[in-house]
Amino acid sequence: MKFTLKVWRQPARDKPGRFETHEVSDVSPDTSFLEMLDILNNRLEGESKSPIVFDSDCREGICGACSIVINGRAHGDGEGTTTCQLYMRNFKDGETLVLEPFRARAFPVLKDLVVDRSAFDRIIQAGGYVSVNTGAPQDANALPVPKVNADLAMDAAQCIGCGACVAACKNASAMLFVGAKVSHLALLPQGAVERERRVLSMIEQMEAEGFGNCTNEYECEAQCPKQISVSNIARLNREFYRAKARE
Image (cartoon, rainbow, N blue to C red; front, side, top):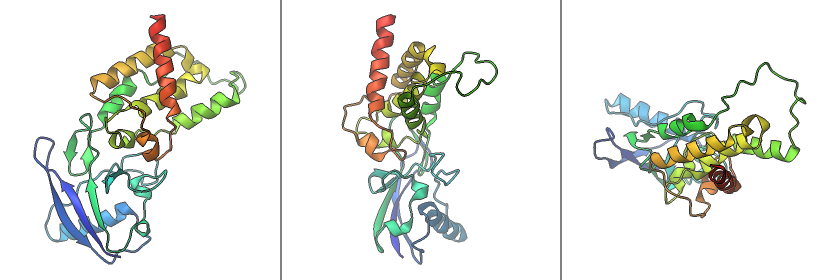
């Protein structure tokens, strides 16, 4: 297979960027998207040219580091998948692919296709955890949890913090990310003790980081590789109103 890549190249966050065109050929349909970039980078390095900088870690759809916008869609045109899980057979032979970093003020470009997503880390540090001393491990049935709550908490906990929701949203909102993190703790008894402080602190930090507001257009859910439901945004709002009422 053969592809034309229009790749965003930016040497640093304070430097201007531009698109650069590259051709890749003899690509196996079973090659993953990141492996295809590896092949291109090997060729560029062999020509004494600067390789394309992109982020990856697990390459198993777990870490969420492979944050690339492909043809205008975060992680590419695939349902419930990360960039590293895309294979070149998902594209047409001879297709032109436009590769960009996630675009959001809160995610400044570090270099080429890599953005700084530490804003998510600071939101978690603001309250996305359980700080009470829970003591020694207890028996599984010591803290009964309704099946519905356990399932919803597990669904929300699948969020890998990749930022696709932010990249897909026209407002660069982080509500789906924060909603998932607040939900999976608020639904469980271990997280209920700090639920009010948690939601107020995390939303305050989210706003301080410069993320936009949610206007309920559901792009975030459509592009989320773990298909986190927007119902978590509704739960986030309920948790917030509840906490504000108790202040």
